[in-house]
Image 1 (cartoon, rainbow, N blue to C red):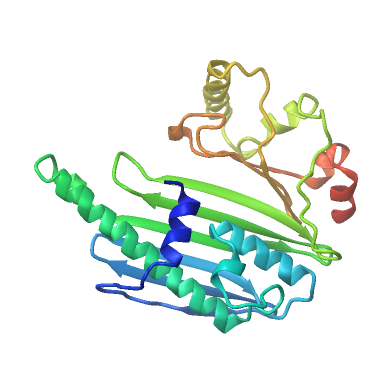
Image 2 (image 1 turned 90 degrees about the vertical axis):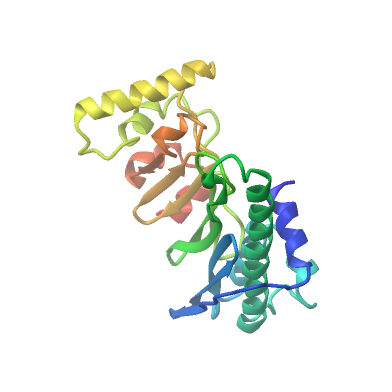
Length: 279
């Protein structure tokens, strides 16, 4: 069962929670509000946090809300009262998000209990609490764009949990997602730049060489000659963020590398629409 399907199923399920602890924090900013719900259920916990647009002009507001609901694994038209597009207010969203967090805790808790019972004679480790954490945060904002980042992490037994990330840049003028940050066919030309910033510049040279060797061996195993550009790329005033998935270019033990390219050094490789946003 996919994560998206599971979350959609939970959202329409009956809300029956044995024990729940709710913490709805509202960290006000001028135009956004961080809304967070934490839930507990026997065997599992959930934490869901979203930077929700409050006083944001259209079409940017609807574009952000669309992204939020896509990342939450559902479609707002199926879960919230119509009309929706630009009328999903704060209270409506709070109701939606609290139900989501509640159902996540309940579903993970019931699955954990079933799993623990099936493994009762094996190890106490199978009785460990499961969890699911989701955050959707505003990463950056300028007069031309807003960038959001998404994080999903959960633990359902085993050696380690699972996690995934995403990032998006939305142009303010028309609400368009800027998905093409780099020009086509620049991967090879960008190799020196990517390797330069694969680790912080102050990383000792021996550590840098060892880290690069680990990635190169992993890429060789995948029969790749070049360090690929990741699919997760978004803009911030501090630089262009390139986030790799776990296992995409290196083993789990080496993490999910994040490269932040200085804008001035990356400019020759940017698409026209991306370059216009970072002028």
